[in-house]
Length: 632
Picture 1 (cartoon, one colour):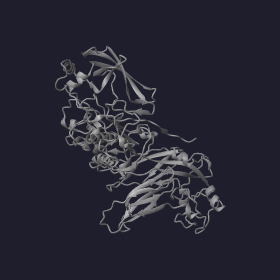
Picture 2 (spheres, rainbow, N blue to C red):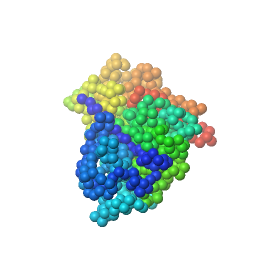
Picture 3 (spheres, rainbow, N blue to C red):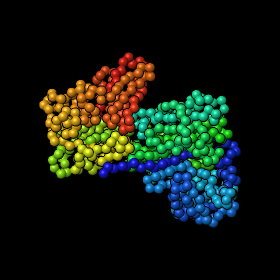
Picture 4 (cartoon, rainbow, N blue to C red):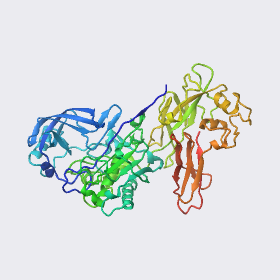
């Protein structure tokens, strides 16, 4: 029985909200001071949280229903009991997180600024729920602030601490989460794609009729590029705009864990409920069960991260503010920050810390013409998750185990120790060239010897116990090991080594299974050195010996079945590899055939498609050589 480990948790992160259609500028909300927000509220009360219940709504999304009781009314006729729902929560392995979520702790006290719905029920104004912790005197001073009309600045509540994330060079902590990122049980999210120097692919959906006045498709793409550049210019992030396309739906409804960010410069599908909301950004998480484990996206300077598998951005063309290209650019930059995992710097309308209020990730607009730009706080936080000293990287691997025919359970083929014989060589790199060590994270049926990861527990299996390529691509496996690489400071994301089938071998010394050697050579016996049936022979002359052909699943009698295609295009300054499915490749470059630099790792689980790697050597280089080699 094989294991099917895929889960489909969905995360919705971030959002641009305007509290009133008047005086719109940009950012999450229009700029209002506390007194203005006080006027917008129909009632204000100090409440104690009693319970929170997560449920799935009729819309299929996850919601949390909050129940609270009134401690003291601070304005109007605040109801004695209060019940309302906000988006987000967790049901089993599924989770949704939204900027409109409220993380209310049972027993905690909160000041809620409320508005009355047409049906007579009550709901809190977005971003205007204030925690009221501390001593009795501290709580009273905040209640008195609202009783007095909310003039001036509300007595501050403590910022989240982040003692565990190192020196932040005087940049204050976010008031939203300790790390300034969206978090799952205290662990922040990030995209590990750029650790290898690979760009995050971006797709852009543009409706020219819904762009700011005077902005055509070309100009809109330039704004998108400038917003991406604002983040990549101060971090290890890289982006590549693949082109424009119509998604045919809101990108938040697209569940494709391909690592891409989908940017929709309009809201034609009404994903944003209110015309006063300027945009929404976030990520949907889908993947194997280990994706939600701390460290799955790497560990940076002691801080583990969990993986974002895709991202999205939606801009609300219905808002009059979005007609201003500078507003458009600021909103876009802010939402891309959410798609990368960043939370707000603060949701305090009278934020007393200038660096938090000045941040592009602050929850309200700035109206200062900044356009696509980031500030000191944003730089500090993006470098926390995407540091210039990047973590190491590797690639996922699969293998069909070779087992002997005698014994029960049938023993592994332990000799020879050639490529693909129940072991792999763990290969990785680090953009800084640091020496690396391999760590086995999980996999009781595996052992680690140096950089060799060895399968040790075959059980009683036959040649028929083998998964199809489609099953493997869907995430099925028989045994799995998770491993990482460490450079001494940072640790890579999790990579997997999956056993996807078994093949019997009557002659354990050759590593060539019975059915395989009989299929191609009509005999179960191993040939003498130099014969077609010897494991080190290459009867079709394609450069791959029989043991490697078995490992790759190619035909040892047909030179057209392998190896992969590899070409260089001068005009586009790129190399193109057409890989074999599931085969592990390393693309490398060298100026002298002596020292080789890793350019990319390629391991294709889906139907193989050409993999294009840009060549970015300096123009003055007179020559450069490239190769793609398969790793055992």
